[in-house]
Image: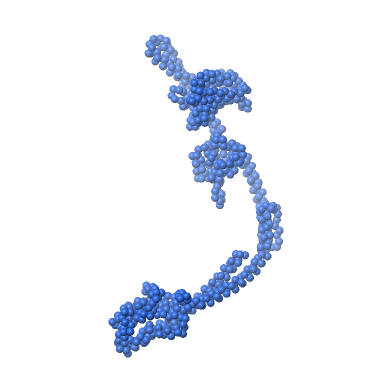
Length: 638
């Protein structure tokens, strides 16, 4: 109703303003007609003096005589208008010039401004009309320009040619030397309008007040009928709707429809809408339940984040994947950006999401809450919110660390098998010539009596022996030697190796700690080969600790897998990430030339594989490396 009242008020104001403007314009039009009539009368009088009376007077009078009261259009006009003004004292008439003969007829500043404006106007008969305030009164003023005409040059042109009686009366300084067409002055009629405007405003105010009273009565009547017919039923319906929306009443209720008007139709429509809402609600709940069941039951980690990376939701598999106890711990102060180990991979992921809207099987290295790293495949979709800012990332994260490890082992096995076949062939071809060289070098050393030549022969035998050792390693690596398995105590074998290296460990300040469980059974193995594996791992651990440290050897029995686990952990420098994938490659070594062949770890790998076991390692730069070997308790068929 407030809006209707404002509309009626504005309408009343518009009607009042229209009345005021209309009556005011009618009055101004009437004044204009009066001034038009007056100026027409003045112009007719001036034309009579100029065209009829002045020529006849000049014909009868001597040349130098001039009677202003009968021959001057300005004087005659002013005399007539003076009598006119006496009859209408409120009106003001002026006929002025820029440089009049009579100083009383000089233009004021207002009039001079319009004379200058008329001189610049191309209109042959310029004029102006409008409202002007003067001396506290408002006037309607009509201005018309006075141009110099040819017949007026007798008096206002060259003073030499002017009548002598005129010069004697007014002098030669003013009112002369004008040219035809110049605007030399103007004539004006001013009629006061303030009183009439006041009366018009009073009439408009009365109309406004009467209209306001009438509109108020109409508004009250409309408001009453509106309240009875519309507001009261709508309030009843609104209260019912609010109780349903707030949940105070369920979707099983129905609005009591009375009558057949629009309110009843609205109630009936609302009842149908409640029925549809109930059906939709049940469908949504069912859909949400199915989605939640899939979401929570998925064995793959599912994470939902916003475009800033803030985690909005995560399933149980995702919580376990990152090593968290519950959802609150997972979502506390973490974004998906924190999961990426490498910033450049994170940037690539975000770029693909923005450009393509999705990623499929995107490989990345993630970090758990305990800072351990694992490899994942990400399948994600970018969801834009309709008519709302922001977006969502729906990510499915799969841990592929074990698969990657198995693939790496398969590749390593294939690589080692290929190299083993090559090494076996090369070793057999080289072994026979080396045996001949060593044999003949031994004979020469027995027969030689020359001391200088003895040194050269020793160098030949030592280097040939080193080559033979490499050939033996190659043969071991390629499994081309006969292997005989016996059940032996793994703790005893490792202890014997430690005893052999004890002197070297003490010299370097290395402490060896052993921890073997009592329930470790005997393991089927090739004792010499397992001893060689342990020797290689212990020597590598010692060489990684130049300033001393600790080597911890732990043995355990894994009942479920029916295998024995032995780990060799050192506190050395660790293995750099960039070379970890090469650790089991043949001939790869980080040692200085002459200090290693690069076959220790690869031969150890081959021996453990031959036993049907597993060998793996973990390392952290600056903290140390741990090698683990797992040997089965059932002898593997060769």
